Amino acid sequence: MSLGLHIDRVGALIEDKQWDLARVMSQSGLRLYPDTPELLRMSLIASYRLGDLYEALESSRHLITLSEEPRDLYNFGTLALEFNRASEARAALERVVDSQPEHLSARANLLAAYCETGDLDRAIELSRNVDVGRHPASTVANFVCNLATVYRDAGEPGQAMGLYGHAMALCEGWHPVAASNRLYAANFAPSLSSAEIESLHCEWGAQIAQHIGPDNREAMDPTTKHERPRIAFLSGDFRRHSVAYFLEPVWEVLRQQVDLIAVDNSPHHDEVTDRLRELASGWVTIRGLDDLDAARSIRAQDIDMLVDLSGHTAHNRLPLMARRLAPKQLSYLGYPNTTGLETVDARIVDSWCDPQESSWRGPEHLLRSDLGFLAYRGPTCELVRSKRGAGLTFGSFNTPAKVNSQILNVWAEALKAHPSARLVLKNKAYGAVVVQSRIKKTLATAGVDPGRIDFRVHTRSLKDHLETYNEVDVALDTYPYQGTTTTCEALFMGVPVVSLCGDRHASRVSNTLAHQAGEDWVRCSNDTQTFVEQVSAVLGQEPRPPRIARLGADASMISTHASSIAASLLDFLS
Image (cartoon, rainbow, N blue to C red):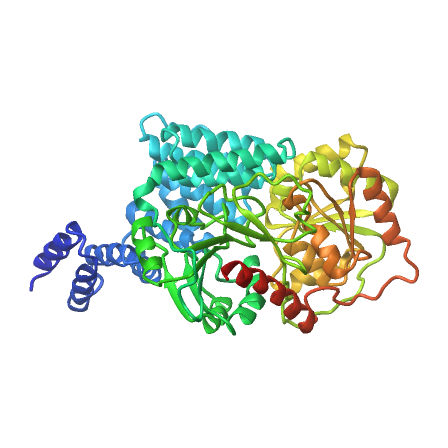
């Protein structure tokens, strides 16, 4: 068969959406006619449509060695971004924007790549003087949505929410990614009350329910169907990610009593994925599938319970939960608020982060795990734990998105109470001038010399990152969106944490960790004065406690916490 005929036949198969045949035929054509750009383009389209994103990425990578056409560089950059290979994405997309400055989709994806690498200054510069007038509304909306994420990550949640709202308006109110991101950003905003945030989520839930319609929601028998229950977990984070660190111990307990099914929307896989695969009875990949096909794949698993781990965070597929794909549906772990969905029956929390007297307004029933909703296990790398360097050092390794003027003013009082102390702030986005300027200005206004602030970005490895805690005497928590993994890491490295707590789950996680690690190690306060007093109390301890892991290292304790969480799941299932 000639090359031209091969290309025509594969093209016809793609037009008819016969993705399996299109991939087989394009790949057979490549064996006959290697390095043919058009066949490679067709192969990557078919692979992408089949959900084989890795194969699509590799075809695209090969293609850009043969072609420097902007469309090929754009496709590679977009695929690389899906795999969180932000540096590769950035290099390809910069070439597209350099050659075609008007390519708004390339600019939008380049904004996302800059966010992933923490280069918020270049992202903001890229967004300036852009003519969006002649582009389709959906393309403009995607650009605005990604720009909103830049401002969220820079610590400007109000501006981010406004931009997400603008992206939604451009699409007549229906832009699922912008809508979820807007809700996620609301958790960072100190100006919003818990009632306002919950109301925004419930409005979204009603909109999703209306969009899907009753015909696409299953009527489910709520009783368990299998003697050995089948529980599916839906996530985009079955990989080296905070969610997986807390999930793995729970799965180790659950697998003894249930069949675990992973419903995977992760952008890439690694050694953590491999460990989770060993614990799971089944693995369903939905990355690249639309909601209808993903829903069919999940229903085919005949599950008793579906647990969402992502909420409104990145790589979520929360609209699938609105379709009622299991008799019982829960939200757990990855999101600090209501999903907003009436079809999510419950959230797993505890009495410390969500006390009985709290005024919960979400549609989910709150399942309170007896020993806390977290089961943290620290990394297994060899670590040195010891105080390094002279002088007094406070530290916060949280994202700047959580560091707003309200908590900076609280930290400023602690810094003024201890004039010799320095403050180390560590995150990939702290290299951005826009972030540094905001923080320095706020602290200077509060009477703190900006020269006392030490901004850090990437370290070479997880070991180096954790050992940076050796420089820190006291970890200062954020508010109203507290740290979780960062607090656990500090405790794992033997560093005490002081927190300002509030009236919602996101600002009460430290209460849970204080119960698990001990109140001497996680000091919770309700106002600025108490916060400063707690910092002083930690520093006044004599003799200073040794630097040993206070959480995440005791296998028996981890298993006990995980068993409590598993019991909450199983009790709700029965």
